[in-house]
Amino acid sequence: MISYTGIIENIAEEIKPLLSKGKVATYIPALSRIDPEKFGMAVATVRGELYTTGDAGENFSIQSISKVFTLAMVMDRMGDALWDRVGREASGNPFNSLVQLEYENGKPRNPFINAGALVVTDCVIFENRDPLIALVDFVRKCSGNQAIDYDREVAGSEKETGHRNAALANFLKSYGNLFNEVDRVLDLYFHQCALSMNCMDLARAFLFLAHGGTDPVSGSVICGPRQAKRINALMQTCGLYDEGGEFAYRVGLPGKSGVGGGIVAVMPGELAVAVWSPGLNSAGNSLAGMKALELFTTYTARSIF
Image (cartoon, rainbow, N blue to C red):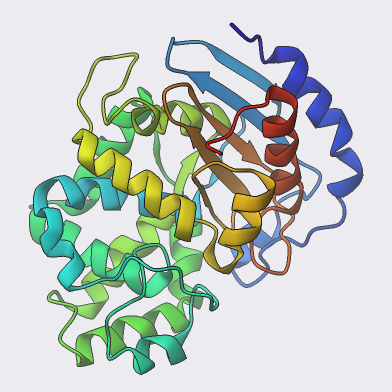
């Protein structure tokens, strides 16, 4: 049995020179004020252990990491019918590309680019009477933390500056691939991106994907094993936008990132690990976070390959 305490503390020291090299997401005003020197890391195991270092207990905006939660909500209910509306291939283009959506006639390439996530959000609305409450309750169930909520300032900031997402949503609507009203879909999407969590919450919340769809701590069934396997597969190929190949090469785990600086990765059968460092690289992924996870799989000799 590995104790991860010394490993992640050493990683926190090793990546310090990288903290000043990334750039925070300035296009969302509420995120532009985050201290780029922050770094947190947490490892949650299927045995119920939790290891942390740095700012692992500080909340941040999870942004696109939320797309995993909405996907898990709808996959278990919709099954393969979801794939009539969204694809399962890596995009190779920026996560908010309008060109690709038009080229492919309104069917997004995968559920983790923004257009695909908007389709999934549309499905969440269709499947739930009060979708925002359902989403927050779902995330609380996954994480075991009933205090999790969304950041109202970030949600407002997303709405004020989310013009490209509005364009994507209207594109989808024009192709008949958005069933609810555009404003309603965008409102839920902005709120899901504004979910506020910390590394401990995220590592704990992703444990169901390391344990066949069941939370190993509470015993709650989050989704079926078939869905868990497929969510992991999609994270492996599409979870880091157009840097998925680089993440697979360097880290070797299914993962999902967000422009708030968080990345969560899963080692099936063993653990989930979350990192947070707000400084981003040119692809919109945490610069120091990528390195931290690369070091983690190197030092633990744990990956899916």
